[in-house]
Image 1 (cartoon, rainbow, N blue to C red):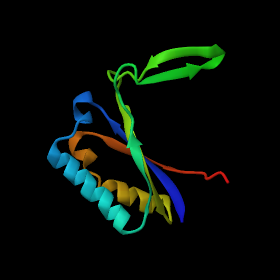
Image 2 (cartoon, one colour):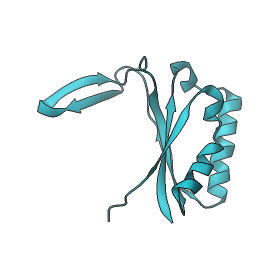
Image 3 (cartoon, rainbow, N blue to C red):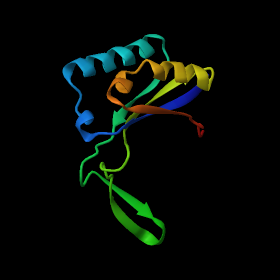
Amino acid sequence: MKDFALIFRLKDISDFKPSPKQMEERMNWLGSIAAQNKLVDKGNTLLPIPGSAKTVKPDNVVTDGPYTEIKEFISGYIVVKAETIDEAVEMAKGNPIFEIGGNIEVREVLKRD
């Protein structure tokens, strides 16, 4: 099996704080992956508020971020295990983030030993 990162993106900062119903749907989705023993890392939420992030660029240039007024922002991630990227994509399709206009990027993880 391979590891895949599911990277969650939102378009609107108001979607960052889910309703209790949305939170329950997300937890049920996550629980279904864990029940299949395919949850590698439950991940974390990445705060999209001023002062919570910086970007370091060449020549020691540091900028503030993230800017939630841009097209979309990364709100968090999890890591799952699957035989193929297509299987990981199928897992991602069950997430309720799509109901609020969000999306999920699925990326294979190269493990370093």
